[in-house]
Amino acid sequence: MMNTSRKNETSGEHNRIVERTNIQGHINSPGDIRVDGQVKGNLTVGGKLVVGPSGTIDGQVKAAEAAISGRVIGKIDIKGLTTLLQSANVQAEILTGKLAVETGAQFSGTCTMNNGKTVLTSVPTTADQESKVTAA
Image 1 (tube, helix red, strand yellow):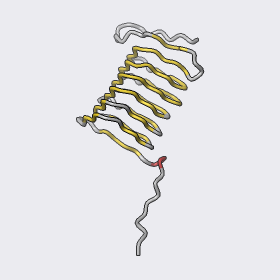
Image 2 (cartoon, helix red, strand yellow):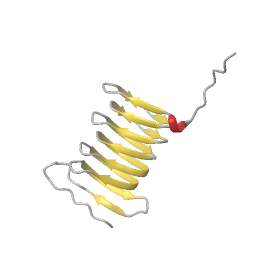
Image 3 (tube, rainbow, N blue to C red):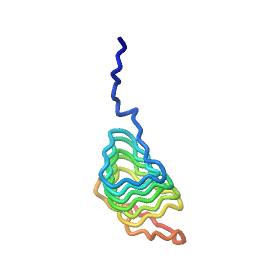
Image 4 (cartoon, rainbow, N blue to C red):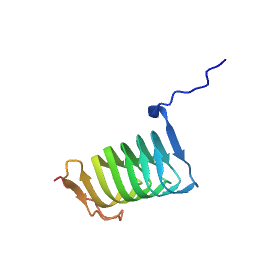
């Protein structure tokens, strides 16, 4: 008789919301998740959240780490590194451990590091204007 039970390890689990998929509601994922479709609701991720160039999230996001190249509107709470890639369009209140912003990323809102110091506020979202980052 074969043993059909599988070991459930969160470190090896990956989920994906593909393009043209629309989800309304709350999502909890113990592992990593990639969003290339649309999510309207709250997203809680135990691992890394990746928002692809075609991905959109409208709601609250919590994750261990995030790389955003799509659109996010709402509140973002990341324990570790948050990376806003070149094609990112973020309109949010960000609470994060560390923030990296690539040239071309659009960000409007506030960013608070875990130490409680605000490091980025009210940056215009137009690509024609230069964004200035000031350290607290």
